[in-house]
Amino acid sequence: MKIAIITSCFLPIIDGVTVSGLQRLKILSQWGHEVRLFCPDYSSLEETYPHWRDYTGEIFPGIKIINLKSNSFVGLDYEPNVNRSSYQTVIKELQKFEPDIIHVAEPERLFVGFWRLAGVGYAKQAGIPCVCFFRTNFLDYLGDYFPLPTPIFAAIKYLLKKLIVWVYNSYDLTLVASKITYPKIKALGINNTRYGNLLGFDAARFAESLVEPNFFQSKYDLEQIDSLVKVVFLGRLYPDKGWNFTLDALASLSDRLDLTKVAIIVAGDGPMKVEIMVKLNKLAPHVYFLGRVSPENVPALLTNCDLHVTTSEKETRGLTILEAFAAGIPAIAPNAGGVVENIKHGKNG
Image 1 (cartoon, helix red, strand yellow):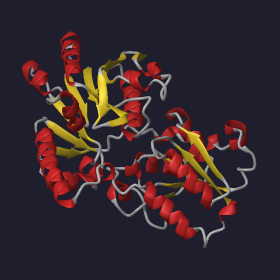
Image 2 (cartoon, rainbow, N blue to C red; image 1 turned 135 degrees about the vertical axis):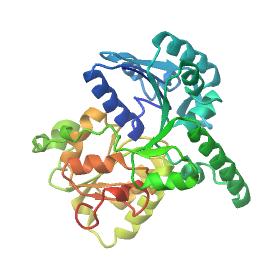
Image 3 (cartoon, one colour; image 1 turned 180 degrees about the vertical axis):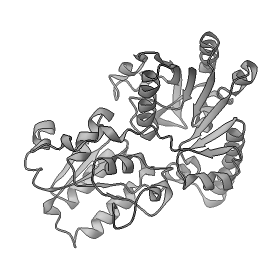
């Protein structure tokens, strides 16, 4: 089968969309399908992602990545998004490729960039299905990035909701990978939605054999950490990931817990890094920032930790929770969003 995928982001950005997307491409390649994946160009962020070209062109047999001209996403310099002129590249490549189906991830974000429904027009003309994937609760994230007076915020949110519902209902099918998120977006007015366990997650990569003595000393040159209780935060250091709550919670717990016995490991990067670094180092003596950890190295990292923590209340499913469980460690998360689908309180988190 020939599959065209249009996505709002791809590697080297590391998040749930890109990590699960990479795994999906690996499987499609193994099954012998042909794929053209369209995603933003990361040349404007070359200083941050010097190896971004490792993820362009033919990365697996039959799988070709096509980067599109991009601008910053809603003014966020660290979040590129496709621009309007780049859609001509999409159309030309689709005409050459002649796909059997088009799959669009985060179509509302792509609409903001292209200023049109990604893939829909071509699919109708070619007589092929065009499906989309609901991945991110952009309505919930709005307040994290744009603190506005209440009346203005309410008006913008209302208009955005109307736009988002219209965008998703324009596709043949809206896929969602969470049983918790499914009824929420149905109630929002997205009527063509269907649940499927489609995250693109491979639990087999998280094997017990990855546990190593002195792992952090040998892999990250961190001495005297392996004897401590290792608490890992795996994810982007962005406002929407609940970091303000995390920092406040740790401050309130510091008087009741002996943090000298705990190693706090932060695996990720983002605009809040300096703020998080300063505040954590005031609270605990053993704080380590690993930066971005590639998807290939995440299984070993998690299996050599003792506890995974996330405080994001707005996940549609929560990929890092599944990764922690596959690695055999419990997870702590808020009783909110899609993470509650997998956490059994008092048993695995």
